[in-house]
Image (cartoon, rainbow, N blue to C red; front, side, top):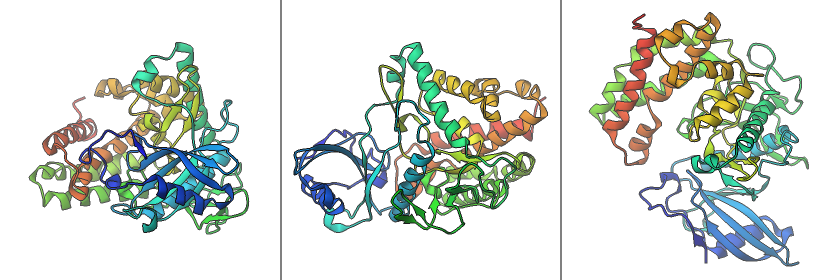
Length: 433
């Protein structure tokens, strides 16, 4: 039988993974049909894991006819609320791209899972018509506060070096001039940075292929932040990126305000948000657009709990060309500030936004400190603040509540969002200093 280590009730789970159940017989048949040359003849164990915010994740140990045992990770996703096919193809392509780009960047070896097979929803494999990605199993423990606190100082520094090396490895492919359409990286013949939030193969519409020349898909598109934004992008410029996402969020608020009076409190800031776009985004239009992981947080990082070495970085489906501030201002949102500070200090060698984060962190976010920044850093900080404004003026929790039926404390969510929006508005439109 499939062992279940996931203790969440159905009400606690993401709407995207509810009802996805696979038996050991279904999992075995899936591997036999998708990987016939491997000659798998039985499943030794299959365990549903606690991890996987929007997917059901199994650790599966299979045996081949030769007696060889192989352990793999199997991610299942449904077609209920997401465009499953697009999500699967985007992640498969992103993993292939990331593995090629980061080869040899970390001394301890391969940190990105290898895709063994992928498939789209098929009812014969289960009761909810799910899609799947099977990947090599990556050893390590998930990066949590508790795990980090037990590391030695040397191990903490080693982990910071490894994470910074990944970010630097990605940014080694950034365009060397201001971002415009059709700028190609001179250092990387495989990728073309054509639009914000997008990665395509060299030659705008050519297909991405793997090492054996097999076509993966016509384009390798990343999502742009929360998966609720699947329908947006790619964008021809940085200003278009921020403007279209802002308009999307404001429109979402207007729709949800018809269902709840609480949301009208956020709608009241629409005019100020439009003004801040002109004031903060347009002056920062030359912000570099670089390749980013897109979801660099503790749950997607596996480490050796003894040495601190990074053993795996997971969940690459949001890989794409994004503003340089993204990885530094939003990454590691669920691990200790000590690690964030260590990584950012290392990042100052290759990213001005990392330097800004050191001298101007959230604890120092006040008008007096802001006034002491250089004109250049004020422009950078303004773009960081606008990025925060977009997230807070229409929090994804609200969309999950109204669109997917998530149970939240609506008043509490809106209160927190209003407080953050008000702080940014007062900082730039109604300053006290």
